[in-house]
Length: 194
Image (cartoon, rainbow, N blue to C red; front, side, top):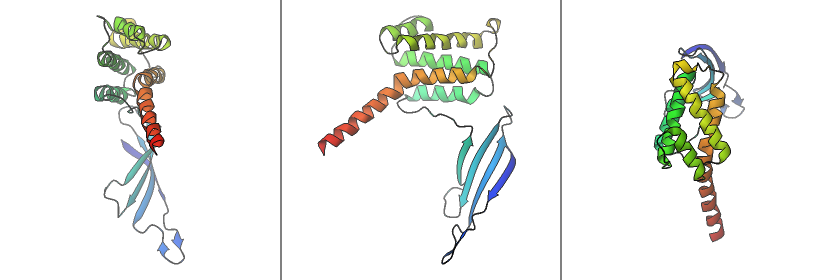
């Protein structure tokens, strides 16, 4: 990414008895433009001599990204991250990778059937995903087909946020919510022991 604007925050506030609050420290705000998608990123960079990293502490302030990792198996997480990496580059590629993610969910949950359509229905029949989420999953599958087959149409960047939110709904229901429930049960068991 190219840094197109940078603003330095003054960290030389003085404590009357001890001198500067942050000796040898810098705090920058930077605006960057992605060379691939031409979209901005705004970040905060704090550097201090006592920090181990030469880069300092970098916090992306915009765009805010949701990170889905709680409870996801490694293969599912990697597929999700691969899809996220292309979402700002090509909506069709994003949809195709979301379709692959759905297939991996079906494999992980031991869905039966020859097609993704059948496997998603099997997950619904087994109660792994409820009927409403089954319809969401089928919608994602249809978007995957459009992304993969040019004769079916073209997805645009306006489609991406909806596809991402629908994907989150499925992953949260199948993986994240059960993982949080287990953590809550363990925490409650610890409290009962005390």
